[in-house]
Length: 266
Image 1 (cartoon, rainbow, N blue to C red):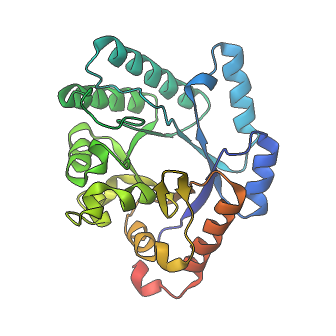
Image 2: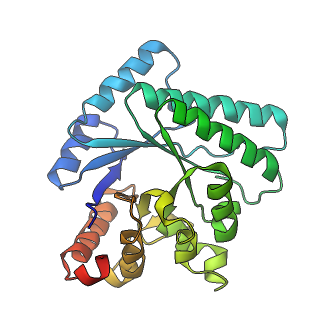
């Protein structure tokens, strides 16, 4: 049976307060999100960031860059080039601060993929995977609620053709048009390549007001069982951005682990 590590995001701005929160509630790590406007712009700023992250020890830290409207496959060559440069910069930054895992997106913030080129996306993503590998960083692609990665058949193809790892967001999967229309099931996002998933984002579902926590164990039960079947997916991020919602989700996830589910975890 694999040992699952539970993490929260860096939703508290003070690193010491964030560390105390995680340790107080028995969490194992922090999933640190970068935002474009906050990326360090100098070696001194990079050193300050590294020091901040080191203060989270003994918590494990993995990384996430939810950059909206920044896509490797943009039809506009200048914008695609900018995305390549920024994402390579983040890969180098993650490596410098000792990180080994980075989650990225395709089509985040877009209502459609008309401005994206599939062939360019595949080529550039495969190149970025190789670049990250050279730095010792495992690049992971998250499924979104809309766009190519919201479609299990296209998400699977991206994983297979670019050799990128996977981050499964069970809240996005729940509201995927492909799932809501009953053409696919949530399991279809992961079952073609169960050994490609290293991370999971855990909450009930994404709605217009953001990520919504589960109200009861049955809200998550089937999807948590699915996560347990993924052999390398031992990093579960409780991806809520308010303390009460996060603790509500943590309580329900712990109910899941406390139940006698051993026959289902084999």
